[in-house]
Image (cartoon, rainbow, N blue to C red):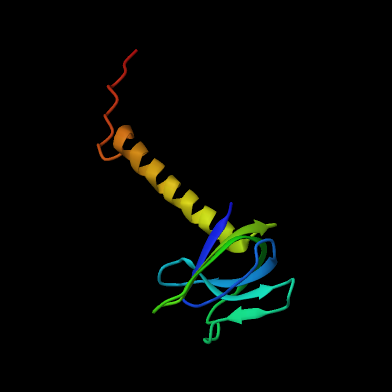
Length: 126
């Protein structure tokens, strides 16, 4: 699954270059935040000024599209095709799976009548 990364800055990467992305999961939003990009073909590293505050994950991908917007607020949009497994991608998938499980439980409770008391069985005699 392709990943779209957006930066507040100018990060010009040629299409087809391999990049190593370092990111961490923001504890407040639980979304991945990119800390640095390393262009593996040229050796140029683009990184944020702040130091990481949590566990950093690394994954490698290939640049499919790069758009640099120049103006008052420079911005770069990168479309990257991950090569190999991504820890942050797994985290996103697990959060989606957890949401699906919770929705299924809520639907089962709604249709299964778990909020109603169980009916008593009639007394049997022989």
